[in-house]
Length: 463
Image 1 (tube, rainbow, N blue to C red):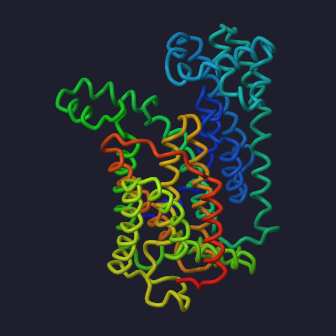
Image 2 (cartoon, rainbow, N blue to C red):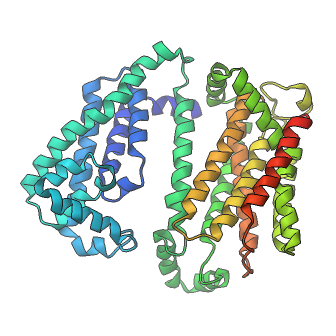
Image 3 (tube, rainbow, N blue to C red):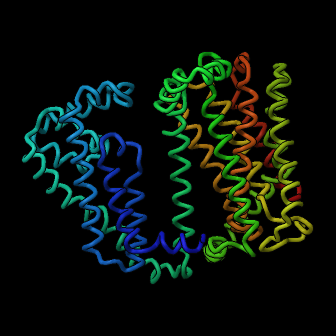
């Protein structure tokens, strides 16, 4: 079934539909501010070029999506002006509307055409045009004319890359699925932990909608209130727990019920065998040392000493539970499932593959650190902490593929397991009101951690 889905995802019809949908979302009011449309269109166009899909059809799909996206935005502004401005997200970010109005006032009827190519105002201008009652015929011509230029400009670079990458880069055959999966995973994680995380916070749309719904259900109201601390229910941690519990269970069943590695595992193995060189292998060995038991100890020891010094034993106990819990789950998982590694170096003899302990432990350490740091920041600044966490975890996970000691599915299972432990620890921490942690001396902590990491990497072999 998985192989069938992979084949379906690369079919010409699905790729053209994806390009049209991305173009629509990129142009849709406000949504375009949250969707990395340029990256997604380039990726989809590149795959389409590699698959030799007819270029006129691909450009037509992008043009159609762009015209529909702007058209829907215009109609929203034209018919629902007051409702749109009084609802999220414009009710929370009125500066977006003000920026669009200034742009429209400056360029007048030409703003729809020009705005298509100006990133910060692109998803706002059609909405503003509708609010300002721009004549529909004028808007339609500007919409179509700008889309006719925008579509080839955005599609052609990716299409050209797709037509030439096999010839000039000499990439392994049939690795498109793993490239799409890795790229899409990073985009989805970035969106979830930026836009999605904001929506399940106290001021987010999903949180407020859930609260309104529960107030109308008497038997759920008491449970909701009992979970509320400082006027906020830990909805983000609850959702993370439910989603990761279901995901890690389903993914583990998929992996264990499949004879041998998955198709995507073999594609990833071919890709990283092709990518691997001496410097990359050396760096990955460093990540292997950093992610083992001694490396994790070097990472958290300065933090543990600081917490003990400030008598925050409650926080230290939660960290200890998280590290100990993920270690036990990894050990139990490897023993129960007994999945063989692609390659087994001497220091890993007797150790199994699923789940990836390096990945899961790194997710727990960096994920919990990001959660505790973000809790002390303003909600608009939290997104950068989560993006930094993703940027730190990703190379650790991919280094296991460079070394050839894990399958890609092992990394996915490990990441989901790590997120599950993060959710459990955060839920327990949020069960009652706690005093905020004291201001953290980041410079001294980072210096101490860096010194311990350097000693671990230089002096001790991997364990």
